[in-house]
Image 1 (cartoon, chains in turn blue, red):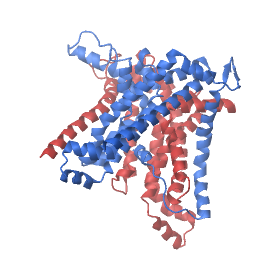
Image 2 (cartoon, one colour):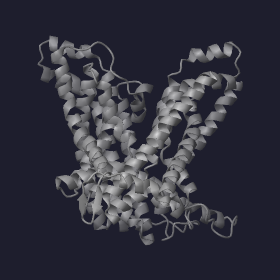
Image 3 (cartoon, helix red, strand yellow):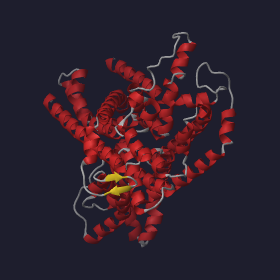
Image 4 (cartoon, chains in turn green, brown):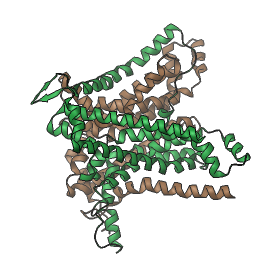
Length: 300
Length: 267
C-alpha cells in the first residue's frame, strides 16, 4: 500500500522555515541519511569502482580499466542475456500493467468497499516472494498441478513439457508476483481524476470508449508510467524466478552476476555486469517514458 | 442500464483477477495436507505428518529464530529512522526534503541482487565477515521507504494545533511529544513495525549474500527446494508462513486505518 504513496511522493511546499527550526529538521533527518550513505551510497560507489578494476588471482589489481565492460558487452552469450533480461522484463511489465488496469479501474470507479478491495489486492504482495515463485513451480512443473490435473481428467496422456523451465514461465510468475506494484499506482491516479471532467465529456457527446481514450486514459498515464517503471527496473535484476522456473532458456542477467560473485569469485566482472545492466535498464526506461509521453501529447 | 452492465463486467473481471492472485498461492496449503510425497493430482488423502516432520526439524528452528531476531531488529530500527524522517519532512518545510524522500525510495528501484553484492563488497573492504548484522543493515535499507511513507501519511493527517495547545498549556516539548504526538501517530508506528518485520522476515536474496554461515528462514527454504523429498515439509512451512504474514498484514492495515476514514492517498 505504501508503494502508492511513494509514487505520489510529494515535495514539501510552502515558505522556508526559520533557521533554528530548519536546523532541528535536518537534525531529525540525519540518522536516516547516515544509514543511506553507509548502506546505499557508499556501497554503490564501491561497486562502480570495482567494475573498473581487475581480479588477479586472489587479489585485486586496482589500475583503472574498461576491460570488464568490454568483456561484459563483448561476450556474445552475455549480450544475449542482456537482451533476454530486457525482453522478459518488458513482457512482464506489459502483461502486469494490462492485467492490472481494469482491476484498478474497477476499484476506483465501481467498487463500494474500496478499502477492503485494496487490502485484499495487497496481501499477496506482502507475503513471501520466494514462496509465491515456488507456488508456480508446483503448478507448472512436469508432475505439477496443471499436468497431473489434466492427466487425471484424461485430457492429456503425456505431461505438457512446455509449461515450465522457459521464458514463458518466468513471465507468468513475475506478472503474478508484481501485480500489486501495478494496481496501486494506477488506482491512485484513477482515483484522483476529477469526476466532473468525465461528466463534461459525456455531456459534450463522447461515448464511453472515446471518453475513456481522451479523458480517463491520458489522466491516468502518470500512474501507468509509475507502475511500469516500478516493475520493469527491479524485474530485470530478478534472481529467484529465473532460477526456479526459468530453466536454461530462462536464465537472466542476475544469474550470471550471482555466479561471478559466488562461484567464480571475479567480483570486478560481477560488478561490471551489474552496473552495465542497470545502465541498460535506465536508458531503456528513460527512452520509453519519453516516447510514451510524446505519443500521449500527440493523441490529445 | 448500460452502466450497470458495465459495472457487472468489471466485477466479473475483478473476481477473475483475485483468483489469479490467490489460487496459485493456495496450492501450497492444499498440498501440505496431501498424503503423498509427490505434489500431484489426484490428492491422496489428508495427513498432518508433514507438519509434524517440519516442527521436528531443528535446523529449521535455528533459521526461524535467526529470522525472528533480524526481523525484530529491522522493524525497530527502520521504524525509528522512519519516524524521525517522516516527522522532519512533514513538520518542517525543509529545502531538499524532496531529494531526501527520493533518496530514501531509491532501494525500491534497485534490484535486490545489486544491493546484496554492493553491501558484500563493503563488508569485504572494511574487513568484516558476513553476518546477521549485515543482513539486518540491508533489510533496514529496503524497509525504510515503507516505514517513511506509512508514517508520513499518518503525520500528514495530523492536526498541529493539538501540539501547540499542549505547549501553550505549559507542557514541555518532551512531554508534549509523549502525551500528544506519540499517541496520535501510534497506529502508524505499529503498522510500520509490522510491515517492516514482514518485509525482513520474507526477504531472501540480500540475506543470501550477506548471511555467511548463519541461515535465515528463506535461506533455509531455498536450500530445501533442491531436494524433492523435502518438498512436502517445505509446503507445510510455507503454508504456515503465508497464513502468519497474511494475518499480520491484515492486522497492520487495520491498525493503520484506526481513527481515520478510508483515505485513498494514504493507502
